[in-house]
Amino acid sequence: MRVPAAGPGSAPAGSLPAELVTRVDAWLAHDPDPGTRAELLELLGRGDEASLRERFDHPLNFGTAGMRGPLGAGPGRFNQAVVRRATAGLASYLGGPTPTTSSGAGSIGAGSIGAGSSGAGSFGSGAGSLPVAWARAGEGLAGHPGPVVVGHDARHGSQQFAEDAARVLAAAGLRALHFESALPTPVLAFAVRHFAAAAGVMVTASHNPAPDNGYKVYLADGAQIFPPHDARVAAAAEKAILPPVDALSGQSGDRVVAVDEAEVLAAYRRSVIALLEPSGPRRLRSVYSPLHGVGGAVLPGLMEEAGFEPPQPVGAQARPDPDFPTTPFPNPEEPGVMDLALARAESAKADVVLVNDPDADRLAVALPVARGGFRVLTGDELGVLIAAHLLARSSGSDRLVAATVVSSTMLSDMAHQAGVEYVETLTGFKWLARAARLRPGHRLIFAYEEALGYAASEAVADKDGMSAALVVAEMAALAKEEGRSLLERLDGLEADLGVHSSAQWSWRLEGSAAGGVIRGLMARWRSSPPERLGSCAVASVRDLANGEAELPPSDVLVLELANGGRVVLRPSGTEPKLKVYFEATTGPCDQGGLVEARRWARRQLGELRSAVVALVTSYQGALS
Image 1 (cartoon, rainbow, N blue to C red):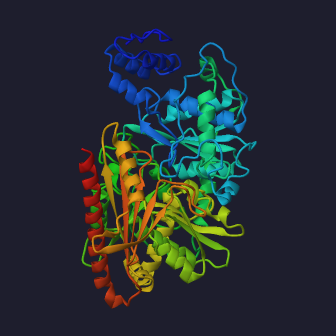
Image 2 (tube, rainbow, N blue to C red):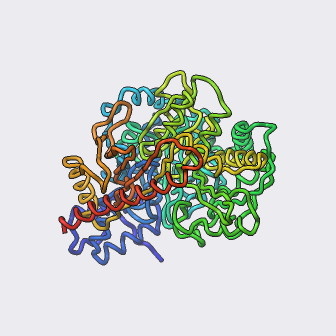
Image 3 (cartoon, rainbow, N blue to C red):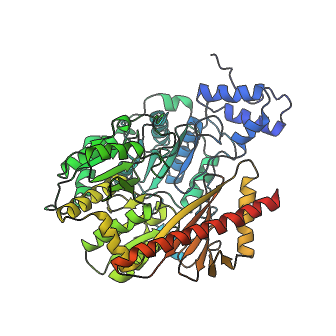
């Protein structure tokens, strides 16, 4: 198909508003992809204002974990033009020379990239909204003289997007270290520190559905970009002059360098294997699935080098496939996603099931139960199990553990009992990975968030589903040698610290008014919070809208209950939905009392959920 040349005034306006046509024309003039240009021209040709506004009125932004969206045309979709603009902004922010305008160069126009809150507050272009401790944590991350590392996963278009990013960086005078193979996100995060880089770019949409892709930025400390740096990169992207087309299609001299992937992977393996006791037990039968992602290129070899038998693969999911044919939503938290792995584990009589998401930064675990079958652990359960193991293996008054405000409070109780420093952060590893920077003189032993994200090694300043899997394998092998199970270990923790049961509920809305409805609900709960949720009295409300001590401003409400439980409300930063987290807690008890304690906690969670659903539904009904 021949795509007409596009430029200002070239698109048929029809009955479309002139301002919209002008914006679309400006985008078409600098969209390098014939496919996405054709998509926009087709929408213009039929005068589809709704579809155009969906693409142009709501640009992708930097959220909790980077920038993600469905593939397609315009600033509200993920495409080559968005990648080039974001990278040009990053290059400008890092201090690369501004490209000179020439044929094929220019600005796409305002509104092409934003810096959204995504549950972490909106900070504008300065650090004034950040608590002093977090402002200090960001010092020294800009103006770093090193190269930029660029990686990608195996999703549709990822390789091309990564090549575009590397070439834009080179055109801006920066040195780009480019991973040519599709590899896990934690390897990219590791490489930023390994090469003393100024930043890193990872093209991935993590566990999003197949039609999506995304773009993560890492700063010089190896952790994901956070305020105010994200807003400054977005602002630089708005003003950046794109390099001319011929600068991206020709040779880049020595400024795009292929990474020695074997050397980096060897260094990564050495660093995470160092987490294990060298003489510890290794007898273990495991089953592993990378969910059609890139973890299979690293984790099996990592476990074998550490001394374990290679995990038995889930054949249908073992190789990268960007269509994710066995799971339309490749998130291990979703119902049914682990079914193939569990069936494989049954037939293999496995001791543990390990499942990564497609870019291998998350980990789900299932364990055999005495009466048959397997039990999938929640993110909180696995988090406290790993924490207990790592704390027992370490010593020193400088130890620190961290979890997010929506994760279980059990880690805080564990830290207090062990005399270890504890830090609570906002959602996202851009905060968790830097928790030790809030406590000078401390080292981060472990950090986790309930959404299956775990950081067990300081070598990777991000969640890492592969090093976490290695630690879980050690834990399971040790339990097997001792003739007990990790589920029994969890029983012991709950007896010592009390049962901490958690659950979630998401209220999803559709349409352009969804954001306003959710904001209205949060405003109502702020101005008039419920005094009771079912039989539970609300003792206090923590409103993080203006920040709290070390917590930056965030659209989060925490309802502390008189019986020790809590309810946390947080609008999603990437989807039109409200996320609600419930926790029910009991006091310590003996092993014989666990059954009744857990039964009470389950009833409590059900009661809290019913009460919140009823209140939210009544609010929605009042608006309709």
